[in-house]
Amino acid sequence: MLHKEAPRSQFGDWPKRIAGYNKKLMYIMHEQGLVQLVPLEVIVDASNRSLRSFSLGEVAEILGVSGSYLRQLSLDGLGPTPALGTARRRSYTLRQINELRDYLASARPKDALKFCPHRREGEKLQIIAIPDGPGATTTSLYLTEGLALKGFRVLAVDLDRTASLSKMFGYFTSHMPGANASMYGALRFDDGLSMSLVIEKTYFHGVHVVLGSADLAIFQQECTQRHYSGNLSYADVGIRMVRALKEVEEDYDVVIIRCGADSFLTAGALEAATGVLATTRAQFAPTWTSINELSYLVALSEEAGSPVSWDFFKVLVTMYNPRDVLEQSVFVQLRQILGDDLLTTTVLKSDALRQAGNIRRSLYELSAGEVGRSAYEQAMETLTSANEEVMDLICKVWGRPPIYASQASRTAFD
Image 1 (cartoon, rainbow, N blue to C red):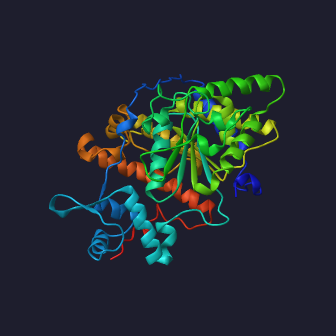
Image 2 (cartoon, rainbow, N blue to C red):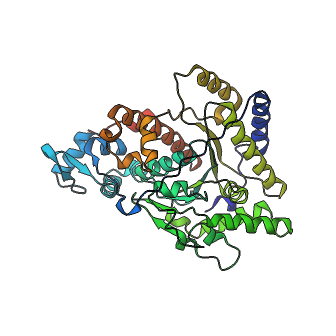
Image 3 (spheres, helix red, strand yellow):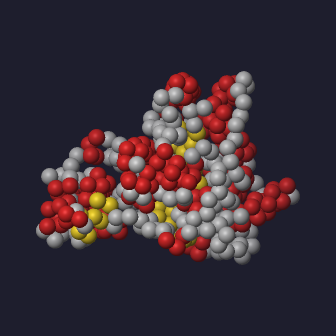
C-alpha cells in the first residue's frame, strides 16, 4: 500500500513548520554570507566493482548476535558455509549474511522481524527523499547500503543529472545510454517505460538503483514548457512518481531518492515521499539554503492543491567537527530552532569518508588499512548511528518498536 492511498498524516503541519524554520534561519542569515562548493567530478570504472567479505566479528555486529554463536553455527553446519582465511578466520559475503538472516528468522521466530525486517502486510513502502545539500550523495549512499546490511530491500533513485550517486555505484557517466536510462524513462510524457526497465543491479546485494543522467534535464525542460502553458502543476510530477514506484513496490521495503537541482523532479520526489531527510552542515549558510529551497517547493505543492503528507521530516548535520567551537555553537542554535526535527546523531567530518569519496568508493568496499583503521572505525560508527536513527523512524511508522538504536537490540545471543 502506497501512502497516497492512506489517510493524511497526522504527524504535523509540515508546510507551516518548515516555513517557520525558514523564517528563523533567514533572520540569522541576514547578516551572514553564502558559500557554495562545487563537487569534484571523478569517473570510476564500473567493471571492477565488488563488495568485500565481512569478518565473523563484523557479521555478528550486523546481525546483533555474538561471534561465538555464529562460530558454533558454522561448526554445526547450520546456515551458509563461511570462507576460511588465515588462521581459519571465517568471513561471509553479503549474500551469505542475508542467507543467515533467513535461517535465524526461521530458527528464532520471536526475533524474525529483527533478522528479516521486510515489510509485512499493511506496512506501506517507505520513500525517503534526500534534497540536494551538503553530504546528500554520501548520506544517500550510506543510508541505502546501511539499510541493505540490516536486511531491507532498497531501491536508490538518482535524480541528479550529474549522476553523483550513480557514480558511487560504479556507473560511467560517459557510458550512460540515451533517453530512458534514468527516471526520465518512467516519467516521460510520451512512450514512457515500465519502471522495472529503468532499474539496474548493483554490486551491493539487496540494492538496486535508478541511474541519474543528463536526460533528466530534458524532463525538467519539458515540465517547464508544460507548466507555463498551463498543462502541468508541480503536484503532477509527484503523481507520476508515485505511479511509477507503485509498479515495483512489492519488490522493496525502502526507496531512497537522492534529489538533484531540478525543481520539478525534486518537487515530485517530495510529493511522493513518506519522509524527508535534509542534510546540512553546522553552519547557517547551507542550513538556510536547504530549508529555504525546501520551503519554496513544499509551498508550490500546497498551492497546487496537493500538500505533502510526510510521516517524518528530519535534518542531519554532516561533516561535523565537534572540536570546532563555532560549529558547536551553531549546532546548539540549530537544536533550539529545529527541535526534535534535528537528528540526535551527527555524521562527523571524516578523512576516511573523504578518501573513499575521492575515488568514488564506499567504505564497505575498502579495508580499514586502506584509509587508516582509526579513521575507518570512527566513520563507520558515526554512519551506523545515523542510519539506525533513521531505521527506528521507519519502524515507528510501521508500528514496530525501535530495535536498531536501542541498547536492547545489541543484546548478543550466547
